[in-house]
Each structure stands twice: as C-alpha cells, then as structure tokens.
Length: 463
Image 1 (cartoon, rainbow, N blue to C red):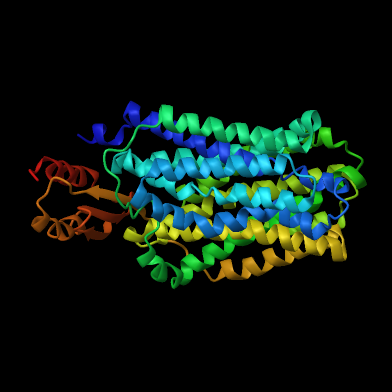
Image 2 (cartoon, one colour):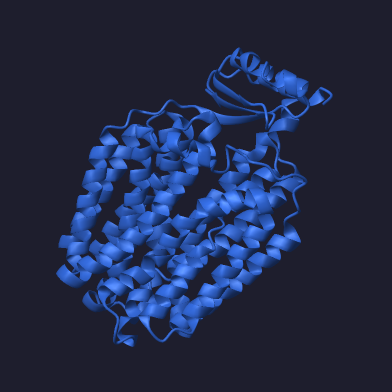
C-alpha cells in the first residue's frame, strides 16, 4: 500500500523536471547579470554607483510586489496563462535591456524582467499536477533548480559577456524565456482541476496570521538580509577583481567555479547533519557568524586574490547552508494550512532583499567606497545574528497533505479527530470546502501504516 503512495509516478517526475527547467531558465537569466553589470559602468556617462546597484537589484522589487498577486490571479484565470504572461514579460524586459544605451533603460528592462513573477503560479501548477504525497518531492526539485541556476549563472555570465558583451546576456535570457514557453506548452499537461493549495500557494486571508508570528518574521528578516548582502556584494566584487586584483573579466569565472563547486560539497554535509541530528539552530548561528566574519575580512584583506578566494569560499559555504536551512525552518514552524502563505511572505522578503542590496550597495559604494559595502553587509549580518539568537529551536515537524476527495462533504470534518489520533500527528486542520486535511507530523514517531490505511479508506469512499 504505502509503496504506491511513496513512489513518484513517471508523469509526476516529468512534471517536476519540466517545471524545474522553466524555473531554472528564468532564474539563470536574472542571475547572469550579477557578476558582470558593474563592469560596464563606463559605457554610460550618466551612470552612478547608485544607479548601477538599482539596475542589478531592480528585478527584486517588481518580483516582490507581484509574485503573490500573480499566484492569486492564477487561481482564477488558470496557471498556464499567468506563467506564459510572466515569461513574455521576462522576454520583453530582456529585449529592452539588450538594446539599452543608458543605465535608466537597463533599470527599466530589469524591472520588466522581475515583473514576470511566476514563482507562485509555478508552485501552484505543480500542486495541481501531483498527488499530495509527492508534492514535497516536486517542490524540492524546483528548489534545487534555483541553486543550480545561481551557481551556473556566476560561471556562464562572464563567459557570455566575454564573447558577446552585455547585450548578448540579455538576448540569451530572452531566448531562454522563449524556451521556457515551449517547455510549458509542450511538456507540461493541463491540470484537470485548478484549486487553492494552502501548502503551495499564498492565501490572502492567512497573511495577517503569518505576519504576526514572530518566528516566521524572524526567518523572513534572515532571508531578506541574506539576499541583500549577496546582491550588495556583487555591486563591488567584480570591480575589485578587475581593478584591484588585475583579473581579466573574462577570467572571473575561473575564480567563481572552484569556489562555488567546493563550497557546495562542504555545505551539503552541514545541511544533512543539521536536519538529521536536529541541530538547525546551532548550524544557523554558526553559518551566520561565518558569514559576518567573511564579510569583515573581505573589507580588510581584499588586496590578495588568494584571500578574496578564501573569504568567498567561506561566504558561499555559509550562504548555501542558510539558503537550505531557512525554507526548511519555515516549513517546520508555519501552521499546517498556511505553509504556502508563509513561503510566499518568505519569498517576497527574499526578493525585496535583492532590491535593497542593489540600491544600498550602490549608494554606499558611491559615497564611501567598496570596502564600506563589505563592512555595512557585515554589520547587517551581526544584527541578523542577534535576531537569530532569539529564535526558538524549531519543532522537527513535516507538513503532509491528506486528501479527502472521496468522502461526502458532511463526513469530512469528522476526519480531524481520526487523524489527530494517529501516533506522530501533531496537528490536523481540515478545510471542508477543499476536502483536504493539512497535517504536521513527527516523522521519527509517525505511524505511517495507520496514516496510509486512513488515506486509502478516504480514497475508497464514494463521493
């Protein structure tokens, strides 16, 4: 019984791979500009460090403003129209930026790129096309595609810039948007039904509850700071590599590739240890501390390429650990029926951080110099360390969606007590209108056999 529930069907695997590919195409296009845009400031006489920073982070503002509304819109007009419209906006923004002759037009293009905010709609489509038991796996595939896209962007961006220039990067991203459209319509089936999935999408009515939870707000602050310092770092890092260290821009990827690859190799065991041995709070504090130390040392010892490489390695080890731990922590502490809303607020904070990092990083660079950017980022991380120290350790609970579609409506509410009676089920919230129960379970003591028996009983009932 449980084997059929726990194994992904081939069609679910294909859906996960296709949607992860669309996500990766878009994120690759957004990130490829990070390691190169600051190097082209001389092309625009009116460019200032502030405007360059805004250009780097502009996508984050429009993404933050529009991703939850676009997700809600997809509940009403369908997933594919919203995703297709977002990819078209991304392509238009890329074309605008590719033909730009001023920094202001680059900013416009980047803002248009970000306005194609389809993350929430993609997650909702994944939920429409997969069973509740397999949804976490598909979401994990999509999440991993973001990390791969970021790492690839730091390597591919300088290579394309060296071959075809800045315009070439934007044309490349426009082509990727078109490829994403092809994948959407050729490889992703149409969902039989479209409905709200509280575990995968934001529900506006739950926003107040999510934003009043100090644990969730603390984690939102964490991801905001993390992406703020990442974007601010790339406002000045390419210039330091070129102007202080004499590294040819076409060779920057020679530094990024080994640093990123080896940092991931080290970060993965740290993530596994934190999850398996329930050491998330300790690993979070350690990683934030390492991040702050790396930034302060970058400010004081950025005259040596070996020192810069070493500090970047520590930076990305900590960054990769935190990038994995924070959303996992959100999933553990968010209310069972508001997980999607909590993740929506978290993603909004992430993209807002990218915009703030670009704008503040550019302003600080123009007024006080590159080293001051690293110092300011280090101070921001120290503040985050204080916030993180006040977070209680999470309860190690997983979210489970339990479908009740085979039950008569009047019987659905009776299932909450039956589900809570299963050993290891800590929380069960039934949404009668959706015929779904959202559970929080402790996998170490969960009676999976009893839960699977109830699942098959619910599926076997006549509607």
